[in-house]
Amino acid sequence: MASFENKWTKSGFEADSLPKAFQQAQVHMKLLVAVGPSKMKFSPQDDAIYESFRKEFPKFDVTNVKEDLHEAIKSGENSEQWKNWMEQFKDTLKDSENGSLLRIDPSNGYTTTNSTICVRAQFLAIEIARNKENHNKSIVNAYKKAASGNSGGCCSKC
Image (cartoon, helix red, strand yellow):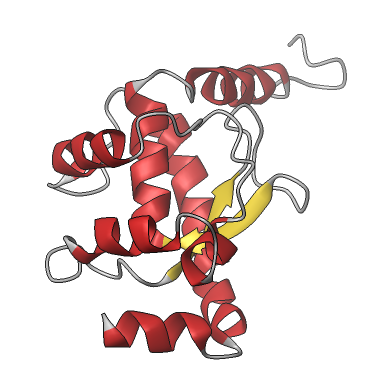
């Protein structure tokens, strides 16, 4: 866990991770809309991540992430719980400790007011839960509706 501690307490961690996190957020939304929540797979470990997450955090509300997940790991009330949960994936989940952007509310896209920074393992757990629990359907439907409505000419009815 030493590498985890150093990585998250080191100043500048977020700045180092943000370009990749922004790119991953764009890819995430494109894949989510193209594939759909029920068919979206992040890794071969999706089911194990989901089951472990829900066992450890059964009441975590994935529809409205109120907790600052970055702070929660560093010094929050659930700091040790998060660290212990993530420890199980340190050798098997690629980039599990890297920074990621997470949508606070799954019914909206990535914006400055609807995004927070978290660890990749947290992102995966929450987004897998959102997919399995059907919380990502509304954003996919909204994106598809917007795309189909903008395909015509001047009045979008062609």
